[in-house]
Length: 549
Image (cartoon, rainbow, N blue to C red):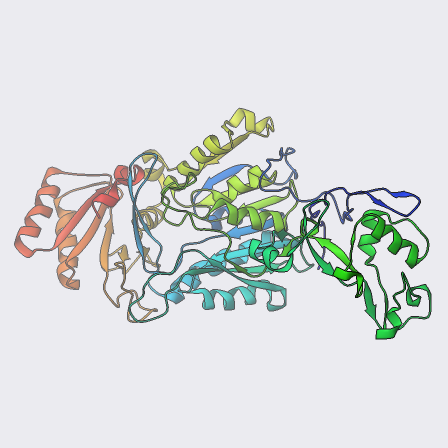
């Protein structure tokens, strides 16, 4: 493992210690700096120092499929990757955005687990390629497909490069009809082929732990402490085996052993062990049992605790409550504290952080606040607009091309927001069909000919094909796409498709519809009770099609 930095522990309160004849100078505990500088804390924003690489643009939000943008990035260019892709959970999210009250449907499901893995695999291959050889990778998922994701990631990143399966308690206990209630998410943590950067983060000890183990109160300072031993196992022939204040440790097969960090912390005066013990006693740092009998012990103060290492089960980061200030209404929004921990642990200031499924931008906000460079990618135009507003409101950044080009640290840009009608008309027909079907949340055909009048299929929430390899299995709705204004003959042909396939609902996409086409769709429903939803390209661009669906 490559350690590039080490987080400085909490400074101890200064305290004077003295030998019988000479005061002992107090000194804050020192820490060794392993590399550039320690990671920033989540409570303090750190200024971003321009672009770290001439090969890579940062502070950019890209709208589109991440695989396209990843393929444009050079190899080994990103220090930390965190992704929270759509779970294979068969859930449908209907949400009113706090910004626009726009109703938006999020279908974070695929027609089968295999389809989900097939979708994620090429994207993870690209993520592995752009990750630095000393980088870190976090994949956030839940129980629905987590086991399959782990197998996939082992093959891409290497099983030997797997570090942790982190469990985050994302919600409170709730009832479940026939099983134990699922309350956690999983994060799979991998490092690059040459190790990874690690800041050795610590967290405060539980107050209950302090209360239980630090029961003694110092008479002079009122501080809590725990008496700990000043001796070590075994007999030593040197000065550490000699008596002090009439107490001979060798009688119980032990020797004097003052912790080295205590000697360094308090700069204990004296050359011999006995003189250093005198210095500790003169400074009030030795605990004598009541009545003067028994072996003296060292006062270990609670405030001198360095904190405890963070385990792989995270129960101290609460989910976002309904009344939380950071809540945006995004259905899968993660708390900022979660990303603060990951970014602090696995990157240094000015490192590059990439989130290829960045949703409402929590990783980007955390990276910006902590002084990291960042790149965000998301396929949803709504999500890109939400995160852009969040960067403005929370990070006080300017969405400005001129300022961004001037390398101003408070500027960012958003790329590739929804295409215009003009650009869509210029697309090759097959590409346009794919765009329209994917925009509806469906699965486009892989071939252009022989599609039997069906350009794509939408699988309803909670259902999946009986055969994961067949596009015709299971319950589904047909999609027909026309790169023009649709007329009645187009609707007539689609009606035949719906009757042939015995479908109760279908979706038709076109730039516009003639009045005859609209009337025929209405008449078809009256005759057969089969519903054709007519959706325009403009409605997709404006993201108003969900209400029709």
